[in-house]
Every structure is written in structure tokens, then in C-alpha cells.
View: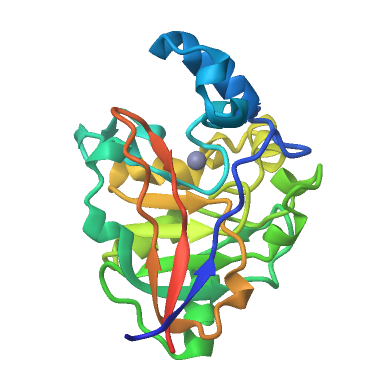
Length: 255
Ligand SMILES: [Zn+2]
């Protein structure tokens, strides 16, 4: 059997991490509570279950944009390229399993913009040329702040132009090791207050023009042993009519 190394690029779904504006609640129902909840449904008494135990189950309250997740064009705008935007259940799975490439932009500071030149330089450094359907993983280094109160503000973000630059080379799925594909909200709000309205969510809104998906809250990109020459799988949970879906993002490396 061929052996592969699999690197987990996902953060856990967990009760609201510090600093997260998106609340997550997980109600854990243990084996004893499982008896109390499911016994009456099946018409069984407590004593009918072995040692008073039955199934442990969890109930979650969260958005589709918690944890490591894939954004579908519907999240950005009702239409994409003049057609109704695809929802997460409509994303071709072929887009979600492909050759991966890590673009190192760790020199960019929090709040800065990752522009086309940054992507060009990152590609030059690793001597790689993008090809259609590559999954582009943008490494900002912000994942190290995951779980800290300042995490949503600690990354550089892409722009409308740099996003479309990738899309125009046939990239359908791209991702970032940070809270958002765009720069942090506080920086975008400052832009808007200072009259640069076009900066608000500009990279997400690029999806109005051309169809693409991005992954947010990636982690462990620095653990992938080479910048290309590996596969990435990011199949989203199939949520009907949704703008996003949680993914177990992984890098797959042939040994
Ligand atoms: Zn999202």
C-alpha cells in the first residue's frame, strides 16, 4: 500500500474562541444524558440500556463561517459574472481536490494588502508557475494567533486585484491562514471612514465579477514540507443553499 503523509490544515470547531465575532455554542450530551433523551423516543426505560449508557451526541449553534471553511460565491453577492451565484452545495468537487501551492507572504504586516507583486515574488522565489485548478494557499503567518483575542486583526489580506489575478489564471479555490481573505475589518472600516469605500470587502466582492471560492482559518501551512508537489483536499460539508461550509482541509504528501 502506498503511504502518504496527511497534514491537517484545519482549526477545530470549538466554543467561541477568544476574539471571534462569530459565536459558537456546542452542547455536549453525554452517555447518561443520551439515555434520558433517546429512551423516551424509543419507548425504552433507563434499565434497558447497558450500564445506563447510550449515545453521546452534540448540538451546535454556529454559522457556516466558523472554523476552517470554504466560502462559495453566494456568500459574496447574489450574482457572479452576471449569473446567479453558486451556493456551497453547488461547488464542483473537482475544484476541491487538486495540486496545492503555498505562497509565502509572511513578510507582510497585519492590516497590509497582499498585492499582485507579492504573489509574483512568492512564485518567483519557489520557481513555480500557476496552472488552472491549483489550490493556492496564502501563508500570512497569522495562524499562530488563532485562539487569541487579536486573531481577527493579525493578518495581511488580499485585494480585489490580487484575487482576480489568481482567478484569471484559472484558480478556482484559494485560501488563507487567517480570519479573513480580505484584510481585517478594522482596517477596512478605517478605509471607508477615510473615503476609500472601494476597499470594503474588496477581495470578497471580486466574486461578483468572476466566480471563485476561498478557504478561511487555515493553519499549519508552515508544516507542509514543500511549497508545491502535494495535493490539497477541501471538500465542504454539503449544506443546502448555503454561502459556505466547514471543511477538513488537508495537504496530502506522497512519501
Ligand atoms: Zn467565510
